[in-house]
Every structure is written in C-alpha cells, then in structure tokens.
Length: 298
Image (cartoon, rainbow, N blue to C red; front, side, top):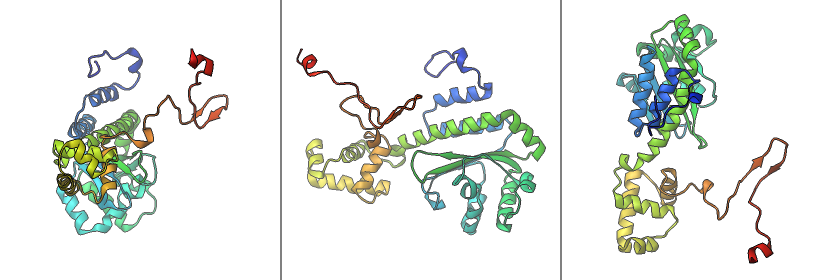
C-alpha cells in the first residue's frame, strides 16, 4: 500500500483495521464528492450492507434546507416524504442526529430497544425496512459552522444478533470512515460550488474581489471593465447562486476558499490566539518576543 502521492505507508500507520486503512488511503486520492460517495458504497457493500443514507443540512430546523441527500433508497422514499411531510419529524436525522453525537442502532430489528415511540415513528421505521433497512447504525456528524448537522446510516436486512456481531467487528471502521469521509465530502462540496452553479471564470473572479471587500468602482478598475458591466455580472452571480445581497456574495467567497477565512486571517507576525500548557499557564494572545531597541539598531 502507498499514499496517493506515492509515499509508502509507514509501519506506524498500520495499527488501524486493514479495511479502514484502505478506505482512508483511497479517500486521500478523492477529488470529487461522487468519488467519496462511491467509497462509502464500496465500504458498505464489502460488509454486506445494502443501505447507505447520507444527509447534510445547513439549517437542521428546516429539512428543506438540506445541502445534499445521497441515498440508496429509491425515489419512492422522497415521494412519500413530499406526500406526508410530517414523516420528516420522526427521522433519525431530526430526532437524534441534530441533537446528539452518539451512534444509534436503527431499524425494526431494534424496535424492542427503542422504548415508547409514537405510531408515526414506528411507521417510519417500517417504511425504511421496505427499502432494505431492517438493522443499521446511524452516525451523527458535524461541521464547524453553527446550525449545521449531518448523519450517515449504514444498514441491511440483518437481524439484530447478526448486526450486533458486525458492529462488534467493524463498528470502529464504520464510525471512523463516516467521520473522515464526511469531512472530505464537505471539503470537496465547497470546491465544487463554482462548477455546480455554472459560474464562468470572470464571474468567479468577480466573486473573489467582492470577497476582498472591493466596491463596484474598484472592481471595474481592477478588471478593466465598465461600472455597468460590473453590475451586470453581480446580478448574474446572484441569480446563479441564490445570494440575496453583497454580504451573501462575500460570505460565499470565504466559504468556498476564494478569499481567506476571516477567523484564520494572516497576521503581520506569528500569532497564537490562545495557548494553554500542561502546567496551567494560559494566555489569550502569544507573540514572539520583539527585538530590543539596541538590537534593532544593530
């Protein structure tokens, strides 16, 4: 085995299960969200699991604000959600993934362990079974942004005893792969923003300049175009991205990496925002010692 850059895998990296190591090495080489999804499917199928359900929402209070849903469930499932919207309230994502970080056993095989649940929730569990999920595990996931949450579930037609045995043997692999794969997927999802929204190179450059805080006249001067042309491009970018105003555009530029994250902006010198050491010494801002006046003069 080797890393995607050709470097050999060191012996100190091989303490994790072989299946997980293989997943992580292949994950390093992914360049698209589609490739990450295929890795999730390969991992699941290698364990005899036929169901993978992955949802990520930027506002978990509103299910319709989901950024993406990738699922092996057929479109019948989505049609049922549209026909009976209240079903969403009993989803594992809404009831568990948005609140907690603990993995959760799911599916009809585990109904005896769920305690008292509503009739709607019970129907929801059985509907999932119709799509092949009799027993499964759901892993809550998080992003660094407030209000963002995600959940990925793996499952199949197993009974509780068989699935418990699978979790005992491969639970760590599934959990670690879910966390690492989600981080990689979210990273690539941002980089694919330009392509997904069909932004031209000129529109991308405009978005970058807005992100740097430049006003229309400054942008016109920088790009060598007229003021009205700037306004036209801004309008086109807003139409393609759904941005409501200039602040939205600037935020988009930072989110997709066209400009530095303001929380991580570079400083004129080395700076540690916060440090806490093992002997209890702390500081909110640590800078390297400055040269004395006579040393600077020399």
